[in-house]
Length: 209
Length: 209
DNA sequence: AACTGTGAAGAGTTTCACAGCG
DNA sequence: CGCTGTGAAACTCTTCACAGTT
Image 1 (cartoon, rainbow over the protein chains, first blue to last red):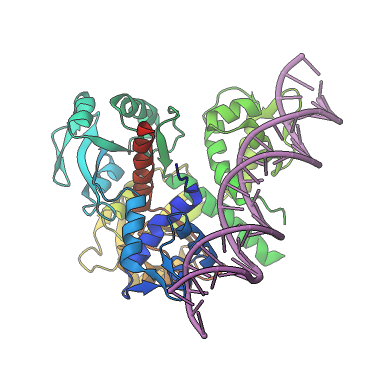
Image 2 (cartoon, protein in one colour):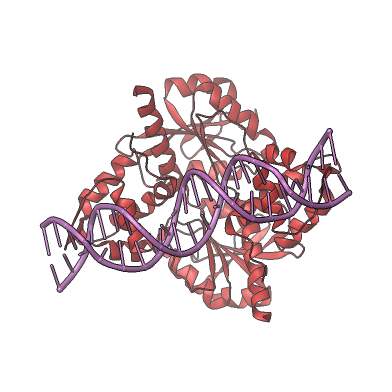
């Protein structure tokens, strides 16, 4: 219908965070740009995809903008999240109480290891994968977080897709196969470190030139 | 000197991973593309930035390509990493033994909380921030990982920059100010979840149309 | 006067399509 | 023949610059 560019979607959560931390009632694109560390034309163009919510000569009404961005991001409703893989990272995420900036509730934590099942983490009990599909349907889990080792990530992703989950956050260091209609976001520590390494090496080279 | 485009740098770690998991001695751009789930022309163009390491009619020698990509990413040397902020996530990362695909060693874990100092996590002792700058210099820590709450992330980033760190991985949900020459990579769970929410909402809308 | 909203230019990225090499 | 390497086209994203509104 509308079609907000992906690059803009990536920035909306940042604007939202800056706005909620900002005191005054109105804000100019220039000020918001400084908070988000981007160019002010970018802010104006990004916001223009949501509609014309600014006032020329004044700026944007902060509350109204917060509402519009939240609405566009689908944050007016709560989302149920499940986490599969209760290793160090999975447990850390499960305990990470205020899951991001609210609106997301962890309503299921799973692991394949029988030794872990029944143990508690972050106030929830670790469940076996056998009950996964049923839990997804019953609790309307819509976002799946994968924190398993790479070797089981694809298998878990397939289970998630079969259970009807269409949005996956993958922390396992592997590229997942998935149907067209499923959105997989990759959060990959080792990739990021390697990129750091690249730019470090590059920077070291610069000194010499 | 050369100038590999950022978009290509982002993909090199993925190619590297696919290649190290691949059996045969040579690989075609088409096969690598399938493993990395990208277009084969993209693979060829990406690899061409490293030099002409393919053989027409045959493909790329896997070992040679692994070496060339590793070299380009600066993975032929080891990097010392420090982690600041020993909350759930920081501890999880500290314990996460095989830090990514080797080449990275956690040689310092820090926290500002006196109660945490001296405790052990993942085989290392949590150190106070007072010794941070000295540790960075002595142990040549070159990559800083921030896993503090958002409220102290900027302060920690400033300390890192002052200590001479030029590469930062920021897990705190905030945008950091930094000098030109410092590379900050953001890994932001709440942002990713909000993007999931956006595409979930969008997908729900599609059913109706 | 101050600021938004946006056409248009510019930069970067992806993809196509094919010449050229092994 | 099969596959790489790459110009060129197509697309996306960023930035500029300014007309238009309050």
